Amino acid sequence: MSVNGIPAELQDALGTAARARRLLLASDYDGCVSPIVSRPEDAVPDPASIAALEKAAALPHTEVAVISGRELAVLADLSGLGAPVTLVGSHGSEFDTGFAVEVTDEKKALLARIIDELHSIAARFPGATVETKPVSTVLHVRNVEPADAETALDAARSGPGSWEGVHSTEGKAVLELAVIETSKGHALDTLREQLDCDVVIYLGDDVTDEKAFAHLRPEAGDVGIKVGQGDTAAAYRIFDTDDVAAVLDLVATRRGEFVGS
Image 1 (cartoon, helix red, strand yellow):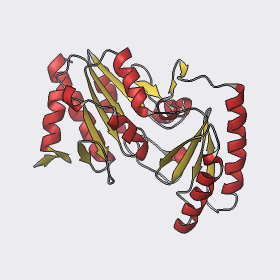
Image 2 (spheres, helix red, strand yellow):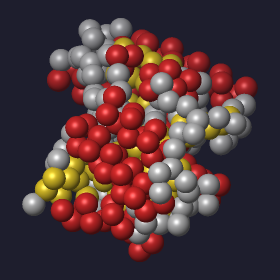
Image 3 (cartoon, one colour):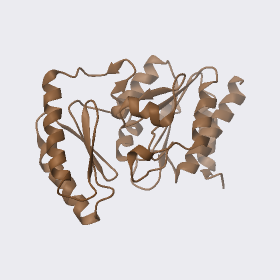
Image 4 (tube, rainbow, N blue to C red):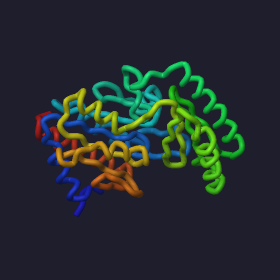
């Protein structure tokens, strides 16, 4: 049996996690808090998810974070979220205190070369676009004909994606090339330690979220939730952003019952 798209076994796991001494509730943005859209700049969050995140963040001994591949400033603008919700951008490498790794002049020059090359590739494929961020650039092919989309991605992989010092991250119809190493898993580790949390709940839908799932500790009560189809290391699965809103609200409600709202 399931309630609001949440399988019974996941409800049980969330109920147990909600009784942690200190809880970290974290989620990806695109495909979780916001539906996937054709134009990244149009990714409006689900109001129900935002309400649930803010509800949880207002509770005692409860931390809430959104960890996204987006630039931190863009994530804040699109989501409308801020303190007490913690926002982490650039696939877990960009905190409000800056980047986890120093961005040298050499890395900035490399990024400029990558951006130029991706623009050259995108110009060959109608519908392809290039997004630039402080330490990375992204080739988007969601609006390219399927056969051409894969050709464009291959050109980016074998071209700038193969250069020394470039870190590639595959996503849904995107390839991101960064000049520093990024990991949502390391971001979760950092937040867990800095915020002194015993248990982590994490929701993610993309390939990049697998790094986060791999850093969870099921033996400690952590809960990983894959949103949508595809292979995953997460122990649980839901199917869409409506389910995400239901999960977030369930956690906030159960947590409130435990700690007192």
